[in-house]
Image 1 (cartoon, rainbow, N blue to C red):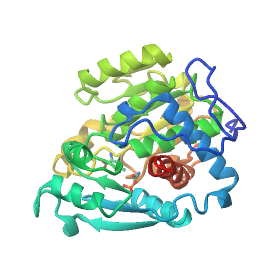
Image 2 (image 1 turned 120 degrees about the vertical axis):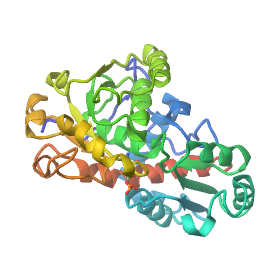
Image 3 (image 1 turned 180 degrees about the vertical axis):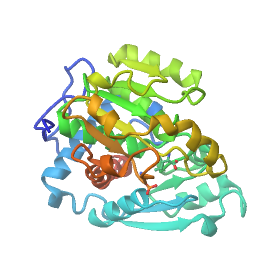
Length: 336
Ligand code: CP
Ligand code: NVA
């Protein structure tokens, strides 16, 4: 693989801005909450990457960066990576996390969401919410006085994509001019990835079966962002369309949490879109294969590919902890 661990770099669009690595001060996010990739600016992403670089290089310096802070994890869907990386990030940085599963809070059933948000604002320094309907996050964010982080909704998975962009950046030293081909469903992961690419200037080829394309509304919005960043974005129903110049092949499950009733139809429709050895062999020789996990081997990706030399899926998963720690440090330390 020619991908290297980087020294320094700009992610950026026009190659001029430099992330402020080395800075002792945190550059807090411009927004209170992290609900959608749309709301994140390039500066926020650069600050996040710079801090993740610092934490990677000197983890001991960040053992107290979240001391005295407590976050709530309000999860209405199962989770391995997101839950555990947030919990461990808090523990390693001197803070605490309290996990509250669906049956504990019964969000919106036991009492109105706004009452939960106001109550928890009095206890926690931030919350991570994993839910179905994105509106739950928005309603929570509107009334809470603490940062609300989207730990995955039916609409978006921004923490995943911030971490994945960091993984790509750490491999290639930049995002600009890196070509990612996403093959699969227009789901929460793709939506955050589309916005992430459009903001950072990374090129993205989106390949879906006919009828599973991203919404017109999102395509319109990312085109506007891409004009600014220089990101090249394309859409196709042909898995081979842009593989020739592809640095990274990315895929995700065909049936997301909550779509189980559509399984049979989806497995039929997505069959020609499996990331297998033939697909990988058409990309650049050193191409990397990414998957947010959990993976369904034999469906969207073969066992051979996920276990093969191009796959970085477990390094990708490991980076969730690093980026989560950086993210929490930026979002929770605003008043310090
Ligand atoms: N990728 C990801 O979010 O994994 P979990 O669903 O296990 O949290
Ligand atoms: N698209 C998947 C992502 C899981 C991390 C889902 O929503 O189930």
